[in-house]
Image (cartoon, rainbow, N blue to C red):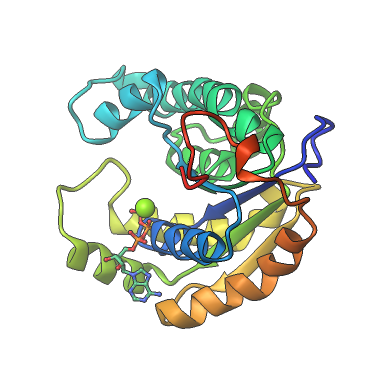
Length: 236
Ligand SMILES: Nc1ncnc2c1ncn2[C@@H]1O[C@H](COP(=O)(O)OP(=O)(O)OP(=O)(O)O)[C@@H](O)[C@H]1O
Ligand SMILES: [Mg+2]
């Protein structure tokens, strides 16, 4: 199913949106739907749980100081390195085993976040550079963008609690929401579907199922015996 040129049988789905758009909620809900149907599903996220992803989390929570003059560029490079590790260590092996892989964020996040927070004046140049350092990252089969208004997302983040993170500022989130509305231009050639993320969780879930169920049906069913040994239930 995957369109990157790699031979694989699974389906690679990416969920995207600003902070509080509901990507984590909806990844989990769709995974539960697939598990109930006895499909092989693997939920993952970026930054990944690998070594470079752990470094990124420290930077996002201000426990790791980055070079102040090139903070956005350093983050972009860390995210690109984490992505290649994530693909090689986690995404590709599951796709080869026939899993539906649901990733909470992928390189569209890099294009949206790093271009929005870069201090460089040359936006097009910044985007070209981010695409270049992500050139070897396999393409998703489909990317779902949960478009949500910045005020709604901010209220949800407040409700969720936790410490403020690097990209939390309202003005940054407003520019990000704009960037996501133009997501198709950020990842030319990719299949991108926009959904109304302001709607209730059940409504968003139904809209996602309406898009994804047909694609999942086309994924060849593999038996659980084909699942990797570290995830015997096929629910990793
Ligand atoms: N459609 C929705 N309507 C109302 N509340 C929602 C909706 N989707 C998620 N929430 C709630 O909003 C909060 C943020 O949701 P969630 O963690 O899924 O967002 P996120 O996009 O993953 O955020 P982040 O990018 O910060 O990880 C959670 O408390 C969640 O329960
Ligand atoms: Mg989340």
